[in-house]
Length: 198
Picture 1 (cartoon, one colour):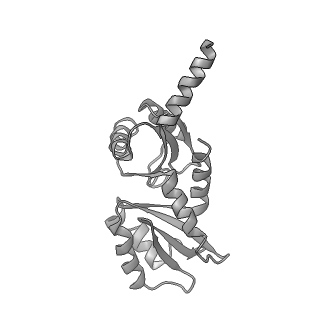
Picture 2 (tube, one colour):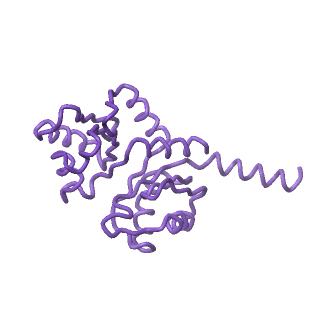
Picture 3 (cartoon, rainbow, N blue to C red):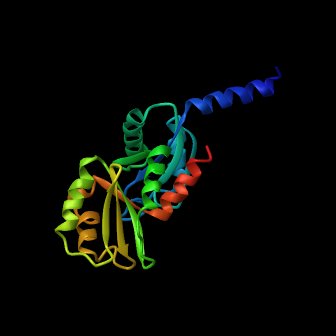
């Protein structure tokens, strides 16, 4: 077998052993957390992960790793703190987890004048806590909250993301600052499409 063929076979074996993950960082390029996406991509490559690519400018990284998610998460958090000064939780999701959430979106009724956000949570208990908060907080007629697969969907009228009482309590409160991060569902779709190409 020729050397080129052997190299190609080895790469395919390595590819098959690795799993594709998406990392979502909180508060990137807002509130003074300025990180260049090229630097972020290099940081992931420096940790031994392969195929690191960023999506948009808000701290979304698709990469491949041979370690488990439980091993990868603290490694990323510790390294980003040292190399980039980023000191906050990183939210990891697999392809199957995001595909499950994608299936849920097909059951949701999202008005045209509303945004659909995914709230990535640090524990399965948090969506239940937020659901109780939503029911006891004033909200507009079209505003909705749906716990789903350990995370949650928030539907809010366009232009009311920050003025919504629920949004202010969840996105702006220190109580939840290191327990979740939010993404517009359009961003998640772009991330998932990139993950599915691996």
